[in-house]
Length: 75
Image (cartoon, rainbow, N blue to C red; front, top):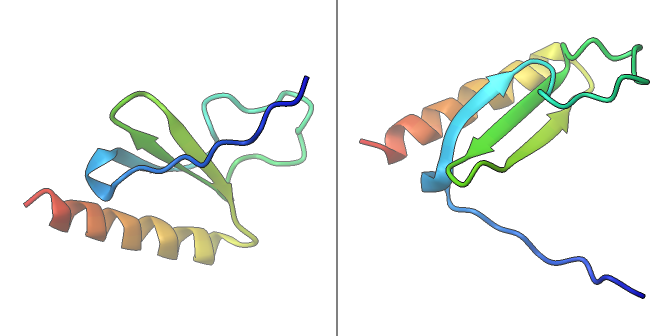
């Protein structure tokens, strides 16, 4: 049995929130990562995408920029 990976996409209008911090469903075995480098983008249909960055400054830049874009698309 072979499952092909499906391409998934969402529009910026589908984003409900951008959250800096650990993902809700974090692996317990990954105790070395406290979540301070993580960012989660949540979507209308309940899905989300988790990102991990190399440093907090980069994570914060992405968080700020995505929130600014999302706020502009909703106005």
